Length: 162
Length: 162
Image 1 (cartoon, chains in turn purple, cyan):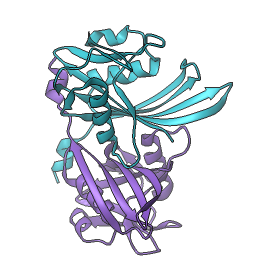
Image 2: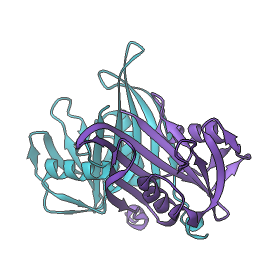
Image 3: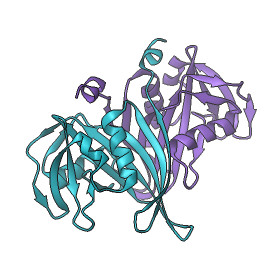
Image 4: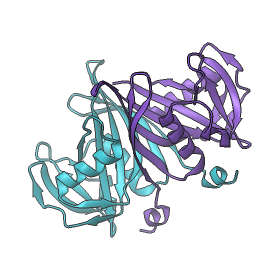
C-alpha cells in the first residue's frame, strides 16, 4: 500500500506550494515513503528533495485514508500523512522537475486550484489545533466523491495532571 | 500493507491493558484497520470490539513503521498507530477471546512483560506531550533489534499567531 507524506511550510503569513504542470493544481511538497522510513523522516526527506530547503519544527497535522474508485469499485487505497513546519533553513528552489515552487498567502488555500481533499487538509493544517483524520473517496481523475473527517486535540492538562 | 491501530486508556492513574494468552505479554487493545476506515475510526472501533467500552477524547500519540526481519532480510513491513483516551463510557469486559483485560498503574508500563517497542510507545503516550514517530525492527519472534524514534509537539502559539 502506497504511503505518501507531504509538508506545508507556513511562514510570514504565506505557505510554500508546488504547482504541478499537469493540471496546474497546487500541492504541498511531498512524496512516497521508502521502506523502513518513519512518516516523519519521509515528510522531511521528500520536502528537502523537492525544495532544497530544510523544514524546522515539523509536526503531523493529518492522517488520511485515500480511496480511488472507478464506477463504484475501489481500485486503489493509500495513506496520506500531512505535516506542517513553521520555518525553513535555506532558500527553496523556484523551478524543479516536479513543478514550480511558489509562496502564496495562507488565505489563497481557499481558492487556488487543487484537489478538493487537499484543500480540506491544508486549510485544517493552517487554521486549527490538533490532528485531522479522515477518508477521501476520489475518482481516477481525482474528482472528490466523498470525504469523512474527524479531528482531535491533545488534552495536555489531563495528560500531565496525574 | 497491514495497518494496526491501538488505544491506551489512561484513567485515575491506571491504564487498561490486554494480557495476551500466548506469551503473557501486555498490549493496548487494538487491531487491524479495515479498508476505507480512517486510523481514528479503526482505533475506536477496535477498542470497542475488544473491551465493550467506548473511549472518549481519543487522540493520536504515535505513528510507527514496523519492520519484521529474518536473518537480516525484511519479511514484512506494517504501520502501527497508537492513540490515547482519558475516559470511557461503559465498563470493560474482564475476559475476552483476545485475552484478559486488566487495569494497571501507569508506572507498571516500565516493568510489565511486553514487546520492547510497545513499551517505548506506551511510555511516551502516558508521559510526554506531542506525537512520536519511528521505526522498529523486530525478529519474527518479536525480539526488538533496533528502534529509531522522533518526536514533535505542536506550536500552537505560532500556529495561531498569524
